[in-house]
Image (cartoon, rainbow, N blue to C red; front, side, top):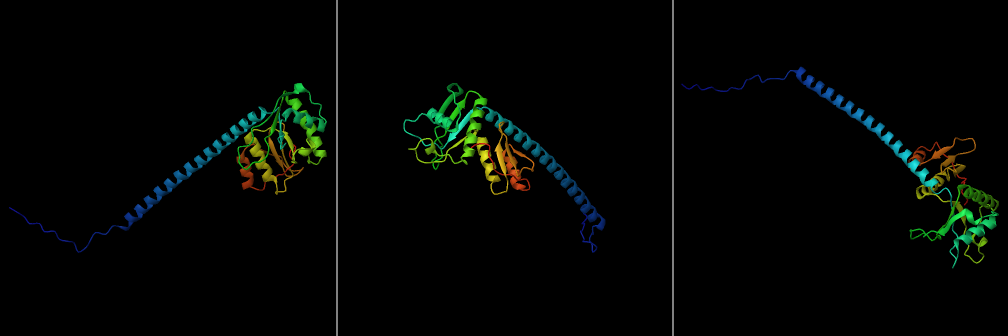
Length: 246
């Protein structure tokens, strides 16, 4: 026996109670708030970890720079002396020593040679002369004598003071720095220029220091990150009076 069931549509369709919609909206809000809180918490943790990692990298860069500096602590670099035919780099050293009044002894010097020169195509400066002293004490005494002479000459010492027949160029005598330390020192000097910073120098231990004036706090610069922080926060500024001779 078959029964025909006929579907009929109710003239009164089902209407969702208002409280259900409010509940769904409330649950969605709670879930969203908790998700946001988790994300914010994770963000804070990542920022903290990033700060710690940057600090560790800064410390490692500082230690590495210090090691590289001390590996060259006995070395001096003579810059911008024109290459003369059949020259002897040691003769350049002895000529400078006599000129500045330093009593150079042969046993003080381990090596004296010209570098191979810069690989940059546009760099027309002559290769530097490197002097490796046997002891750091000899290197420091030589540099002190050179600084006094350069200062008396108002840092205007020329290649023609060494060789009258040479092309005229301003020469410098500085400590030999590792490439990364030399670059950092150059960037610190650029930063110091034009910012009313009076002092920028490198210590015997290889630390680069900035100081706005005699009364200001001394700011050590060990990495480019520290210099970037100063650039981004210009309230801490300092300038130029380099310990090396230029």
